[in-house]
Image (tube, rainbow, N blue to C red; front, side, top):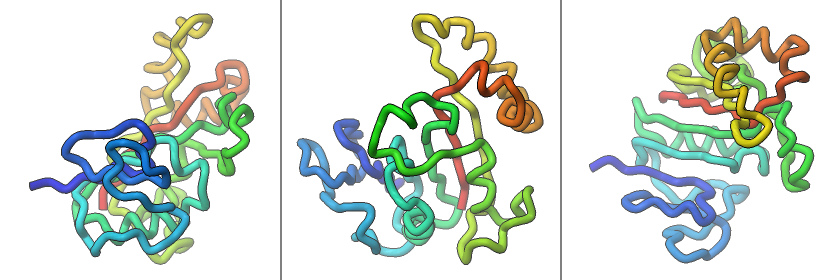
Length: 179
């Protein structure tokens, strides 16, 4: 049976998953502060780890190393964090970190930026990455803009390096890494 961890779940309780949060909310299976390492799990336990809207609140590098420890070989970690242009970064006073579409490349073996020597742990590869845009209200045009920007890695990099990211700020980055 596949073991899944919903890290920093808050009120997003997922049935059949281990839901971990610092707050003892209804449905939370494990109450634990992710800033306190190690996490209360054995090595190579989880097939899938979900980290939605948590890494921007913490010192995430030691946590990624710890998540790597508790993931099975071939396991997937799905991450959602605010993009550095997201207005949410500046609204929420608990946000400590900013992210680019290339941030998580640093944590892969044979990193495309050549910097895989930075850390003593590596995920095998990035299997998915996307820049996600606001699409409600005034941002309706982003339904057309988002697929264009996500057509390939060169386009995402151009978006971030050019005036486009300032003219059309986005919301989040979504990344999946495989161990």
